[in-house]
Image (cartoon, rainbow, N blue to C red; front, side):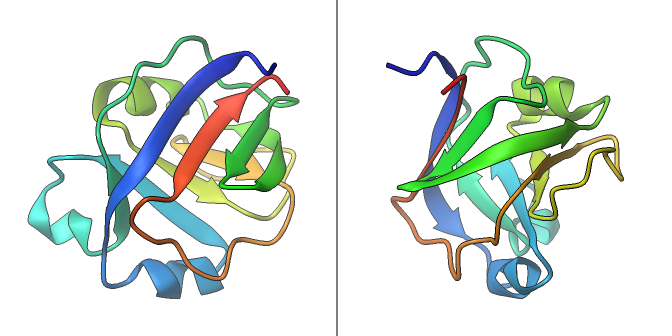
Length: 122
């Protein structure tokens, strides 16, 4: 069984999430998110960050598994405090933004209420 780092269930999907997925990005934010930001985010209940997210770990969206390739310097703090990170589906080895987590693989075509995202060791 994989060691759990952080998990969430999508509770609302902003109107512009699909546009960002087409740009290989997904913005996560815990409820309640400011209204002007919520349009761009997949919203979820705040969760418990059990350990720091690091390259070499795994992220799963439903049944799709991604390898984490880079983590921005503020990503773990933002996730713990705000439930907020930007997922970049580009496999970059260096984070382009402090709050970004980069993963290898194509993004899902859409994100829906009830989708589960899990960060783990395996």
